[in-house]
Image 1 (tube, rainbow, N blue to C red):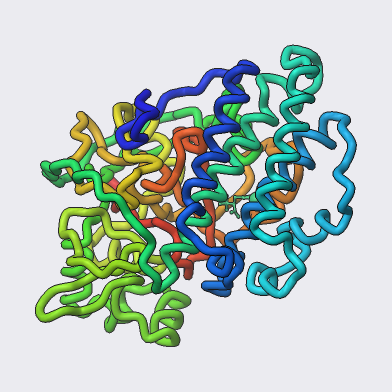
Image 2 (cartoon, rainbow, N blue to C red):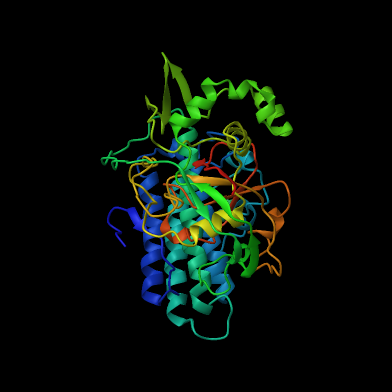
Length: 421
Ligand code: AVJ
Ligand code: FE
């Protein structure tokens, strides 16, 4: 696995963590977060850039506080002195849009809090028994949870930075060259095991493994590109209710949407804003910053549909190879950049919207806390799969489930189409 440039990492089943690996992975996650924030002023770290997102300094201190909750208090250690933090950094206590108005830790205080918690959690790590009976510690689960949580908040921070109209300094490693033959892949029907019982990194919502019966289906070899999505726009896709879910049609009318977020017409073509930089829209890149309703409408326009999450996981269960995760380019790679036998680029590049609501698997049990998954189950949220260029490989696997409201466009999310065979 190439860790030097994360671009092009293999998505493989991860083993349980050793203590040495815990120290390494926690350190790498914190470094990734601090490196991302390094170019920003204190004012930028404290600003509210979007009502959808927290000030960046909140995510920073929240991650430290989450570590105190799980790697210190959760393992028998004592709380830090400042009890105000339990309220400030509880994601359910205050709306994201209200967090900038709270008396948050300053950036310097948040960094120091993070260092202090980390020093204490590593001391405790020395003493714990990863092979004892404690379910939190079994397979180093709680440490894997912390590593993932921190990387997930880095992706959240990247969404915040993308929403600003301020240039973020980008270094620009060369894109990979795409080949990009499209078409569809036939996936045989039958029973398959969805979810997992034994992946030590899996969240509660990925469990338990259970048999799902699928009819044969066709899935696109590649995610839908900017070029293809622009054809839908040019064909009047945003003006024709026949393609839209009724709630989606109401949403695009009310918001007067005419194209994906961060696009702007320029002559006959399009520009897109990426981290504050306007650039020509790359035709062969997977489209991103579309909501579920836009993905759903495109699929109907194309005479197809979105895959269910079971179909997506079935298609991904035989996929391997490299993926564009935690990319230094801050962009998806062109389709065809990772040639494979079956469907390509299921992992990395863009999260893929599925047709499915975020619901519990049969036999679900909340662990270790109901507020990670359980409180979000129901028909309000749609499932996304596969991770994006902003997702770290530590927080990606075949069974990983992400979710958001069907109107949300700030995610690094696109989609691919499917249809019945
Ligand atoms: C899984 C991305 C929907 O950000 O709300 C972070 C991840 N949970 N801290 C979110 C999460 C708690 C979660 N998503
Ligand atoms: Fe969190």
